[in-house]
Image (cartoon, rainbow, N blue to C red; front, top):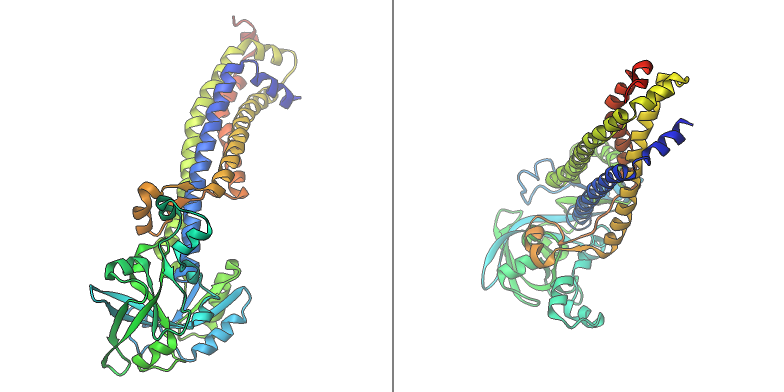
Amino acid sequence: MITSLSWKNIWRNKVRSLVVIAAMTFGIFGGLFTWAIYKGMTDRRVKEALSKEVSHIQIHDPRFIENPEIGLTLPDAAGIVSFAEQLPGVQAGVSRMKIVTMITSSAASSGVTVYGIDSEKEKRISELHLSIYDSLTLAGKLKLTDPATIGAYLKDSTGSWFRGSQRNPIIIGETLARKLKVKINSKIVLTFQSADGNLTGGSYRVCGIYRIDNNTFEETNVYVRKPDLAPLAMLSTENAHEVAIFMSDSKLLDQTIKSLAGKFPGLDVMSWKTLLPDVAMLNDLVEVSMVVVMIIILSALGFGIVNTMLMVVLERVKELGMLMAIGMNKLRVFKMIILESVLLCLTGAVAGMAIGAVTIEIFSKKGIDLTSFAQKGMEAWGFNAVMYPTLSWQYYLLVAALVVITGLAASAYPAWKALKLNPADALRTE
C-alpha cells in the first residue's frame, strides 16, 4: 500500500517529477558512458600488454632486471617451462634470450633490446605475429582503394613472421623502421658484448615490420631466431635469460606465481603488474576514480532531489496532517516520503542505465574513432586511437546501489521534517 501510494504521489506534479527523472537519467547515462570509455581503453591496453609485450609472468635471474648482463642466464630454462606448463591455468611458457644491443642501419642507429626466440613456440604466448601483414595486399582483399581509409584502419606493417629461408631474419617495430629508415630486406647490424666479454655483432635482414598500439615498444624491441643469436652471444641455444608464461585463466595468476616461487626460490618470479606498474596503476586508478566521479554526479543530483522532496513535504503539510489524524502513524509517513525519493531516483536511474547499455553496446562494436586527430598522441602512451567502450553488469549493479543510497540520503531531511509535523497544527495550515 505504501509503495503504491508513493508511486502515485510522484506523478501528482508530472513536470517537476519528469525534470528530476530527466536529470537523473542524463547524469547516470553520462557517468556510465564515460566509465565505459575509460574501462574499454584500459582493458584493451592491458590485453595488448599481456598478449604482445610482457605476458602474465616472467622469470629471471634476480640480478637481471637491474643489470641485464648477458651472462645472467637461467639454470635449466627448459625445466622451468615444463614445470610451469603443468600448472593449472597456464596456457604456455617459452624461454627467450634477451640482450641489450645497438642496432645500426646505413642511416641511423639506436639502442634496443633483442629477443632470441623460437618463432613457432612464441606464437603460443604472444600475438605479435598477428601484427605483421602486408597492408596493401589486405586492402586489396577488402576492396579498399581510398588511401585515407587504408591509412586509418590498416596498420602500416609489412613482411612476414620469419617466413622462408632468409639468412639471419629480424623483426622490428614500425617506429624503429622509420627511425632507421629501413624497409623489408634492408640490412641492419646488431652490436653487443658477448658472454666472453668481447665485442661482437652480426648483420640481419629485415623480414617483418610489426605495428602495435605502443610506439615506445615498437622503437625498443626487436626479435631474431635463437639459433641465429646464440653463436654471436657465445651461448648455447638452451640458454635463456627469461621465461615468459601466458595464463589461460588470469584468476589463477597469484596462485601460479606462488607455485613457481616455491619451486624456484632462487629466481625472480614477476607478474605483469610488477613489470608494467604504470599499466597496473592506471587500471586500478580508473576503477577508483570512476566510482568517485559517479558519487560526485549522484551527490550533485542528490541536492536537487532534497529540494524537490522538501517542496513536496511543505506543499502537503495539511494532507500529511490529515493522514496522521485519521490513523496513519508517523513511521508510515516517514516510509512514504523515503519511498517517493527512492522510486524517483530509481526511475531516472533505470532509464539512464537502459540508454547507457544500448549506447555502450553500439559503440563497443562500432568504436569511437579518434584516428584523425589523436592517433600519435594516444599511441605514444600505448593506447589505440579507436576506443571500444565496455562495461560489465557488475558496474550497473554498483550504480543501482549508489542510486538507492542517494535516494535514501536525499530524502532523510524532508522525511524528518514530515516526521516532526503535529497533526493538529498541520490541519490548520492553509
